[in-house]
Length: 559
Image: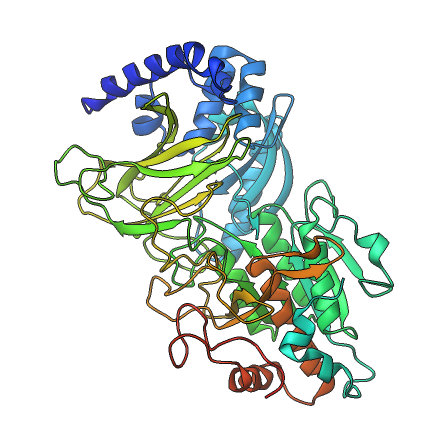
């Protein structure tokens, strides 16, 4: 065991005392009750004996057994873990056995084991089983030989006629008689929710739409974001038939995409971001969904992401050496400023994913850990951590999230090397900060699946003058491909977000999806031919030719 084990145990105890004495006079640290008061930050059992369980899941289980159900509920609530009573939503990965039919058999066996212990299987996809299980059986599940890993679900992040209709020239195309008069173009807005869509039918949206929820609770109206995106698609392509489909987790996402393919959809508008869901080179489970849809004839349009100022990447650097990464010089903390009541989340991954076989990665044997600190009264204090064990088959990822304070202050991210044989290239995304993180690197800030070779990736420019929006994520991909492919209007108006209130690549993406749908409805051309037309008509911005900031340029439907 490393010497710093004891050092961090003492830091944890000191932090608890300081939270009780210092913070109440300034602001209440909302997650103080969720700290593992009787556990050191580096738990030897979880780290070295139980590699089949995600760090946060293990800690939740330990809080339940050592402190009781109320403390476990608080722990879960502050980390946005889906929990009701003593039941928690988890994804159990069955041991893959190669062929698809074998993976199904393995998942079926694990499903039976879950239900025999009192859990409930919500949905499955290949070797993944999304379930609601009692906290008391988590260890039993992990101990089954047929179970590969127990983790929290991977969740996506959501990134009046829009001014983009006229700025792209779509209004001129709308005046042309339709070429496809009997078969409407089908556009799916695949998103997290469509709150308020019903009141917009026949006005901001078509009079009828097709809806389907793949959330476990069936809640189509879980979020308003998708409604705003659907408004823009309808503004751009008013004759298109819209499919409003939502999901919450990656397992639900896989099943949603299969359903969309079976509906014969032409275009998918996708203003959603994923972190720690792939190697950044177009591989991974979400990119596999994109590939499957594209191979079925669908044109998938993805947002680049809004993280140009919230991204850092670089080779692990420890010149002292003391096991802590130096972001610059002797500085081992990546700091950033967060407004009051704004949740903070950190996502870390590194380039040791292994081989992607179409279903899963072979995994990492390079083990790094992630820590979240807060700056208070002139000092940095440890708040939370993620210490997943990477022993050869696990994903090279760590995540900490859900913390906030009642006053604005600085927070910091710290990366530790635990057990490695080489210095990996690290990538860190931060959400919740105001302005750029201290050691910001915009290059390579694409979110997933914007890195896919099978998606049309869209960055954001202003609708009024095509000026770059500072937050718009940039390429290159980790395998050095140029992304985005286009940029499109943001800062536009709509019913959902109001007058010029819809910003982000989330707003830009449905403009491009709508452009594809509009031209498909008005011309005899295929979607691939339409992409060639749009590339030829794009307004080149920045350096000449396609680049990692603007792509081929701002989308224009007229010369």
